[in-house]
Image (cartoon, rainbow, N blue to C red; front, top):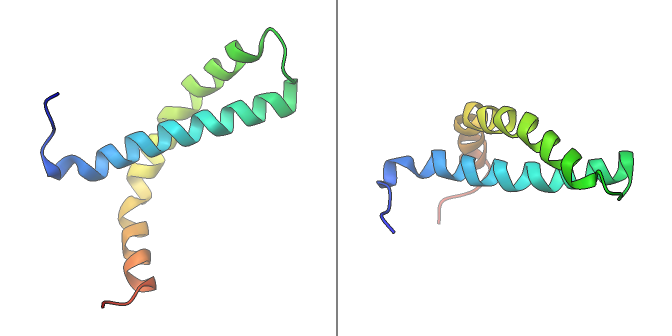
Length: 77
């Protein structure tokens, strides 16, 4: 598999992290709100399709702030 240049690491991190997190949260919230039934998977999929782009864009937007906060929170060794 061909790898992307390292300059895309932050974007890829945001892509993967948001995709995984939104899937987990969608599955849990749909189960809590509607229960596990024959419509569960479809509801999860609809929720995921709507919320993942929002989470990805949000993570891209706040990532620089989070990097600065982390840098302020740890000491150099």
